[in-house]
Image (cartoon, rainbow, N blue to C red; front, side, top):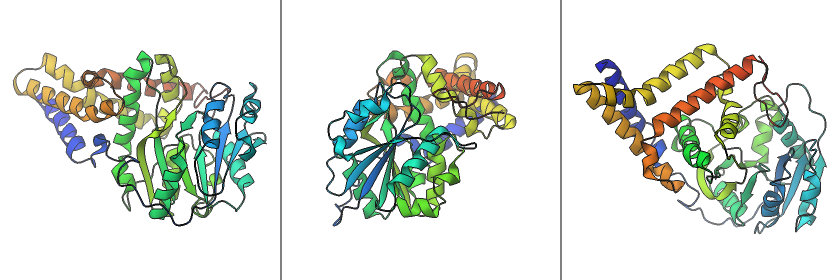
Length: 373
């Protein structure tokens, strides 16, 4: 038991003090603001949409309301929607800058979103210097594009990506959503992503891509089958030049995840893909989660002496590391104590993801199964 306590505590000491400060939420679009560019390059926003009637008016409206000094237009790729998504978007104010493209049938080997994005990129042509890839359920503040371009031009970046602030209204969202971003940052520390030579990653809800860098990386076709398409995009573009990823309040998700079931569906869609569909990695991940998150409270309640002390110290470090993200989402600090239980939910979603994959239902989204065993 003492060995488990020592290992668990050592892991949290490494995570807190030697994991690029992933938990500190310092990488934000409001820090280290770049100067405004002398020239504002042309930008085309590309929005893939499939049955997004509930959110498309607000998201497209926020794009058409961008206060951007340069040339800017929006392409909505309607991916066989059956709920009038395109018609709702067409009625948006400022629709003169909006082009609606009817998506072509999905080819074998492509995910639906990436096929829609690819068609939008082709339609944009060679005029724009940057492509703004954004989801149909993301609403942006009017100055979002200008801040993205300013950062991208100042650093000659191949990619600027913002982790859209997720909706956090229902009890399930308040309990589970801040941890989603916390775990993402643990896997892909933003400071390491933004460092030359670091890992590549991105957040798919808001990505400003330099068109020439995307073409040099092989275009969207190079990642056509990726279920975790944003991180695949980040890795591909990192090989073409520096990238930047940060938190923001400017872009926010407007999709509701009102229940634990809907959040579980969102997580399980790609959790097993993160493990490369490997049973061995699945077992290792579950054992690791138990050691990192379950062992500290178990040792605190059932251990004795130094074993109990190690468990309590690890649990305290865990709770403290979660505090900056809880503040970012305006949640009570007491949720930090509950992180082991939240992690157990995510472990269950990972198991669910593997189960769905082996049942031939992996990666299901909007009626499409995109990852089959």
